[in-house]
Image (cartoon, rainbow, N blue to C red; front, top):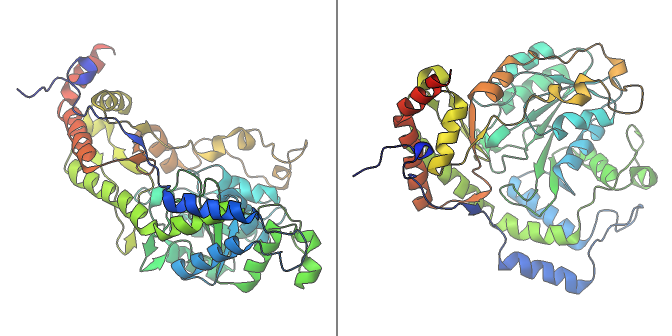
Length: 429
């Protein structure tokens, strides 16, 4: 006899399996690292203008492979997506008091990158379908101080990139894509991360492919590429040799990728179609399995795009479902379907913005702006985080079709048994 009693109240869980971490590293990566170790060259960089300024042979081979795969003119390997964002902000000339439009819901590094150069993050609300910047709101937010638009292809969904690029070009500002979560994602057949003036990819360990830590910046602009190469490798010591006359932001960092990471990256890049395809398959099965459930909206694929589902986020309608998101999630967990609520709280609620203290003791660069960061600034982002988003870690887990059958059964069981949850919830109110 089918057990309809929810596991949270003592019933048998619908899915009794165990989900393990996804390991994309194989023998090829191990062999590639061993070859580098045997060579003795673990990093080929010199922090001066020389033949070694651009890094060792494996780093350069990795960059060349990235250029071929993503059909771009330049790829600049760095040691993290965060470093890539900082390099991008520096390369486009963000200066004290310049405004950079950013989304409110993303990893904090996106909004921190402008601050490094004294730029002022301007938070613009999200499109509730793509979870990315809303182009109409971006257009309204551009001022004479705007230097760049920094868009994130969040959860592997693709922002309105071509529209945002057109807005940027119209106003003479730069479009930077934080494409950490959407490798191989496309809009109208063009790769995300190559539609803006600069794209930044992540190779952090919990991305579709990874090198442990790492990142890649892409651009079709020769000057921007050279500026990012300088910024990653002690720019101030190399500008003369590079013939760089424009010294704005040419104060360099050490953002260099090692030969070891590049060796892993070369092998991971060969497998990118498989690893991304697995995440798409999982999302498609979940979309099919959760279709038609009242109050549950699976991710929506926008026409002309290929999302790659870094995270699987559904929208939860409390009124339609009849119970709170919190108790529904607890019931899912009891049935074997792990979830998390929301994503990251809107970044303008972080202390750095609420206290207006960033660089130095005087609160710079907030001393250069009258902008106020308060709750209510981006109502869509706040509603999604606080009330609607229910997430599943699509990218970091090894999930088979057998697991998916059980996970879907678990979700549908909780949804069908939400009356049990409602009775208990009402009994405690």
